[in-house]
Image (cartoon, rainbow, N blue to C red; front, top):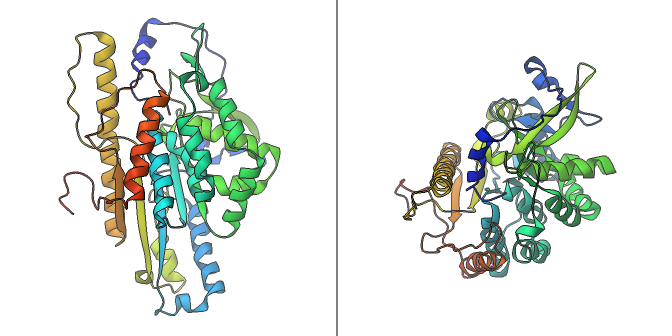
Amino acid sequence: MLKRSYWLALSVFIISGCASVRHAVPEDLLNNARIFGMQDIRAFSGIPSDIFKRDFVALLEREEENDPSFFNFKASRTYFMLAISGGAANGAYGAGLLNGWSKSGTRPVFKAVTGISTGAMIAPFAFLGSKYDDKLKEFYTKHSTKDVIRIRIPFINSFVSTRPLERLIERYCDAGLLKEIAIEHKKGRRLYVGTTNLDAQRLVIWDMGKIASIGDDKALKLFRKIILASSSIPVVFPPVYLSVEANNKKYDEMHVDGGISKQVFFLYGVLQGFDKALKEKGVDISKIKYEIYVIRNGYVDPLYKEIPDKLSAIAERTVDTMANAQSVGDLYQLYVFAKDGKGDFNLAYIPATHILNAKELFDPTEMRKLFDLGFKEAAAGYNWKKAPPGIGED
């Protein structure tokens, strides 16, 4: 969630500290590790998941029960999907765009929503719809750096404490929000958040609706920890540890910012074999249509900026450049996924004409400007881009 210019990470080479004793999950048990008392709530991206595949097949079977004509080879149905990227304070743009989209009267109800890093904070509100627009606006326009982090001394496993951010997450992600997410999950809608398992170097995709549906205090705490983990850039933010069990033994998992693995994601990495499973059910997949909307809380075009000849500035620019390049690559993957499935791809991002002049990591003045920009663009009818930069589509 923090701005990608975390140049302080370079200082790790000259800072030593006391490491805590860990009991990490052994490599051969990674796929067997489970959160205590919770089953089938997550999957590793890039590894086909029978759990997620069965869930999606069951969703379509439920569609048939509610509307028998759905599988008669005549009917077709369009599903709307939303993927929200990382971008730290730039999440104010996505928050504004969603608010403006509501204002335009054209914002759809999304069948599935994914969020990563700052997108993980936006995603629950986006999933629940326009009635949470005011909360979304408040979160991204009323808070500053002091409301998110504080300097941590001595440095052990991070430079800052995220206790202020934890309090914000506790405030906004309460039991009432989880209850509403659980209701929508029961209706057949899905909400996913991504974290990075740093030991495994893999993106973990969490079924947040299934967690919310458990409904107890343990589920609420896990829901909050996942959002915190998805936003926790390593070295700057402390990692989030999750207690798990595998083969009747207790271990801990180290989770950090999902944006380390992906700047934006969808489920193609875990739903391999989905089309085959549908055909076995007699479903004409050509009748299943979908539109995927991607909100990139950042730029997609290179931005010129003269960089001073000093370590911090060079490091900051380097990390920003790497993150932007990664985000464009992730957009290309989503675009190819959509085109292969004959889906409709739609992309929004911060225009290169908007220059950021933040005075702090979370500058409320600049965040309000970004919010207003996104709101204005969407309220007037956003001109969704039909391809990532360089593809050449209108």
